[in-house]
Amino acid sequence: MLTYSFTDIGSDSLYHHLYQCIRSDILSGKLASGEKLPSKRSFAKNLGVSNITVENAYAQLLAEGYISSVPKKGYYVREISGMIPSAGVNTENRPQQDISKKRCVADFVSNRINPEQFPFSIWAKLLRETLLNYHEELLEAPPWGGVLKLRHAISAHLKAFRNMDVSEEQIIIGAGTEYLYGLLIQLLGRDKVYAVENPGYHKIAQIYESNGVQCCFIPVGKTGMDVGELEKSACHVAHISPSHHFPTGIVTPVGARYELLGWATREEGRYIIEDDYDSEFRLVGKPIPTLQSIDRSERVIYMNTFTKTLASTIRISYMVLPGHLLEEFQKRLSFYSCTVSNFEQYTLARFIEEGYFEKHINRMRTYYRRIRDELVTAIRKSPLASCCEIAEEDAGLHFLLRMDTGLSDEELLHRAESAGIRLSALAQYYRNPAENVPRHTFIVNYSGFAGQEAANVVKMLAKCIFCG
Image 1 (tube, rainbow, N blue to C red):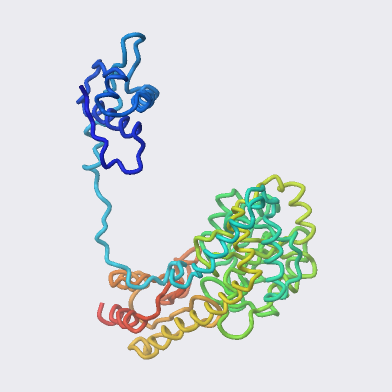
Image 2 (image 1 turned 60 degrees about the horizontal axis):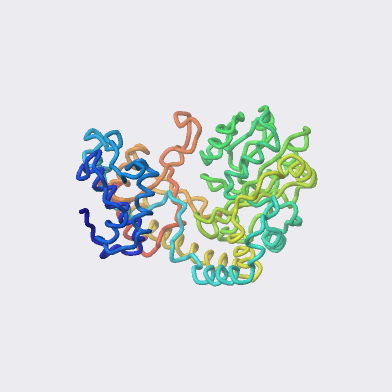
């Protein structure tokens, strides 16, 4: 008679544990094909379990094809040779991923924030209260644009901090800007040509191209996207980040902003997508007014996200549509459901409404200013000071480090990587790196840097350059 132990099975149910034991014996060959299994009653008595436990285990094995039932005779093990993995796919023989790579000492590439800076206690408190107080709302299907409470909170925030007078109806919530870009492509049309910044964030062009639309790469000059080149192109939509361009750090001055608006109004069907991704973290002076706030022709679509201000894993973004595009969106695309859960939307709404978001931004500005200052001070006190220049350190969460070195960008990046320092070069963000692009200019993205090791990290970087 078969026998199995039911001790130390944890939270597993009795029948499931029994099913797994029998299945294991069948797969290993301990129970041969055609072998008869004990009757349910005698098996249950021998194991000291109920008949229903054995019956449920047999039913699962029968449903999965491990055993067969013969009326009035009992249960038999089936031929299952085809189910047993061959030696050729033994996972133990597969090459293992190399896990011996050098530990990352400093990551100046990732957008990941320092986990210690996320307001866990406040977020947990609001989430618990939301679960207690919004029973019905949490389980209702939200409007296609998102929960009105969150849209209202965002509208009030934009008015107070970005001087944008927009209604809650104009705001569309989505799970990440990538999703919202897809909606905009459908709204504006796949026949449009989209202008993207060169250099620029590669993923933007990748999203447009993967959605089957044509992209045109417009050079970025000292004041942002080159309006003259934009005018020469056949573009209908310009995707720009005027408040803090990535990766150059350029802030588009107001004169150039009006030139961009002029381009948009000269022909019907032209629009500007204003990506305001980290404008909250301008570390000197007040935030630059948005293009949307000075647009009088309804040609600007404003976009922002909470992934920079809160955490990259909080996939809540939003766009603000001009009135006529909102009407078009409602007619053609309102069948889409909002892609952010009500739990997150109501929690974030309260986080904004009750002043926690403003306090968090103010605290993070102070924190990031300290991190930046420690890095900049460490660089200026190190041997690097004799061969480098720091630029665009005030606009957002990265600055440029221009080096006077005979090393190629590739060699310097390799040396830094070997020392556990992740960096990216400005040249990597150009569409065609072989062209005449700035060399020896590196991007120091400090959003996830701890700060207390600034001097040591800079010392290691200097060693990479001078000693190899």
